[in-house]
Length: 117
Image (cartoon, rainbow, N blue to C red):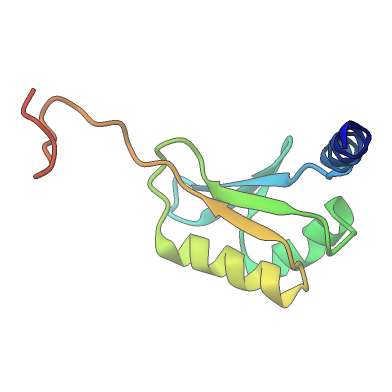
């Protein structure tokens, strides 16, 4: 029994180590109101044409995991998020995760279920 448990743990740790890390795409809004994407040190307009040209060069494997989202507490409109998701799916990327972080709660923000501060 212990032998099977040890073999299972070894196999699980090997699979966990072999799992590829996701390429991170940060979305933001430029001063002119256009959508921007940042992958590593590359910043470019987050238009369908730019994504179609640049992303296959950066992430050629369409099965590689991608994680995109608004940077910490950024105010990125849905048109940027929806456009990015549509472009990634249209290019054939199949492992896409979207992340967003809400702004921190301040002393003036209340919620019906929260105790008063």
